[in-house]
Amino acid sequence: MGCNAAFGKREIVVHFTTEATSAQHRDALTACTGAAPHTSPEPIVHSKYASSRVADVRFRVDRANDHDLAQLYNCLGKQPGVLGVSDPLDMTR
Image 1 (cartoon, rainbow, N blue to C red):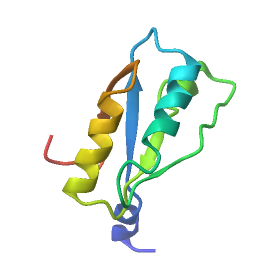
Image 2: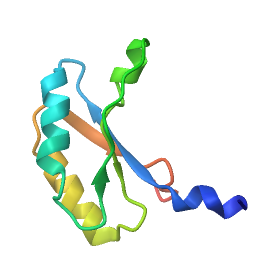
Image 3: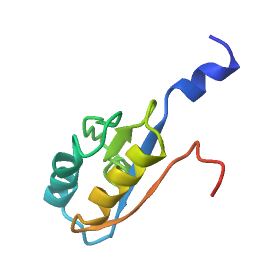
């Protein structure tokens, strides 16, 4: 694998308010699954660490274009408890 291999895997992380419940996390993932082409949810996985619950909702967006991302962001923005999203590979922000 070369240096560019990491850029083949791209995901966005959904951030929630501190008051958001686990049910709201699951509901946001479910509601926005299929909201846009070329986006797919990742399973919610928790470890023994509380920090694993903070950024537990993620979507793979390897092949998503700007329109796909806008559709996904729009869906997530309507979900209770969602504060915003981050894209660790988005160098424009």
